[in-house]
Length: 161
Image (cartoon, rainbow, N blue to C red):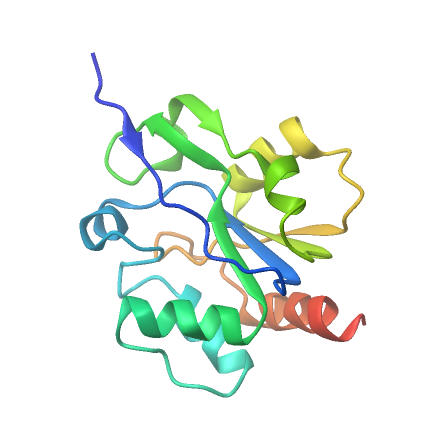
């Protein structure tokens, strides 16, 4: 029997306009107890670069960065059985309660970080009346990552273009 692993609470406040949803924290993220903890993951570099900022070195700094830019961050899977960090091994999972979450902030655009996050979101929340987009995973395992797609989606989220 596999052990159930648990994700993290969402980072957000009432002013959050963009929600970025990943699938489930990696082993390295679970070790440091915060999102995108693998230094090889492109998430922090890309999002911070979009805003012309350096990547904060602490968890508190990253939380402050997100809130300063009205970004909410969470994972679509809140608990599951998983082997290592491999999304394709996620099973017996619970899905984030987005309907309750969205009542507590001003999110008007959702970015799904990778195929697994997108598929689970679409299966559970595909009818949500908020625009959403699937982007290439920022995982170091993804050889088809495209920073321009991320910049374009961030521009759409913040500039409505």
